[in-house]
Length: 256
Length: 265
Image 1 (tube, rainbow over the protein chains, first blue to last red):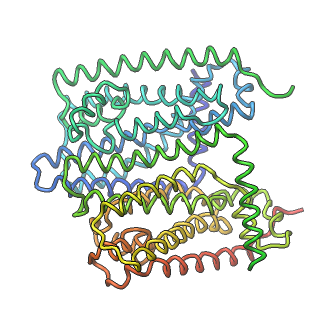
Image 2 (cartoon, rainbow over the protein chains, first blue to last red; image 1 turned 90 degrees about the vertical axis):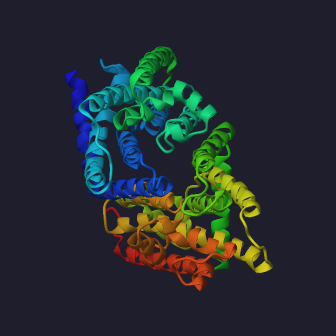
């Protein structure tokens, strides 16, 4: 495990070496959160659940910062250039290497959203969670994050066969954009769409933790959502395992 | 000028031909990019399923705003995207190649790589725009129809100017291309919603300092016969603002070139 942590630390340091990226990312985060909060404050003006909805928006946005993966760009490039072979020669699991490298970078993403939240939670009527809800949030955020990373890795790993970023990636991205509740909260969706979304893996990293935090999800509905998160985690873990077992058997590197 | 344009055109066509060699890849990229923006439009439609309007703008009007953003984003990226990678080119000293050839280096560089997936963005933008202008309450006149074409051209120039600018800054700073992802994309998200919703300082910034609002929000007032926080005549100024932005950024590029020293040896 020490090897993986060293990899994570290296990508953490690499992410910190670009001052332009750091400051502009901070400003960009501020812009986007301000946009979401402005639009939803306007839409829900006068609504008594405004504080709850704003808490939801903030947490969903927070989840977007930690649920971030370069796999769709980085992995096809490694496969196409043949660099993946160097990785496969080493005594490390390649999916795990990719995950740890991404986590190193995501720690920086996390550092860059936290100050933005400090502003939102202090200046806006955002409602705070009870300790119990906070606990559920931490659990569901962790599970949801795992589902996100594995889904993204699975979709990107199709590149072993296509050599490029692919439509599965695009579909996955679309699912996370439309059906995850990160832009439109699930309870504001048309009924049919909401019912379908609840069953799909896309809500696991966004809607579930955000709604557990703000209190829209509680009781049996919450237990059911956590159960589904675990099911999707198992499914995606299996898919990633299968793809990489098949792929490493077929990988052909040009030359030498 | 004619020579420059014909050089640009031939380089562009060569770039397109080389990208089209991988047919399946081409369709996957274009389709994938269309999905990206289609999802954005669908999200707006889902919000409007529940609420009557966003900031007093209804579905047709919001579709007009949104489609102008991604039509001009697609066109501007298609034309100017190589500039995002300019810092890499400068570090490796590869700009020499473009300076030594007998044509305008700006044009040579902008046509050096074609990012074909932007066609998906532009194509979808065009379709949504054509739908939006039939749904939105517009009293059509010949002048407005002609102006809409100028708005697309001017908006492309405004967006393109910012793409060129983030790259050109790397004559002075390190790795400025990331500003495309960290600032430009969030700015495009901002103008996908009515600018009038935002706090006064931000409205001012987007209209008079970094004139993103001239891509869609401001000229939409001319088409829709609306009035807002700016003088009504400004609603017709998008082509002019586009030319001004591009002129300014081109001067920055020329200034940057005087700073270029190559990579040594």
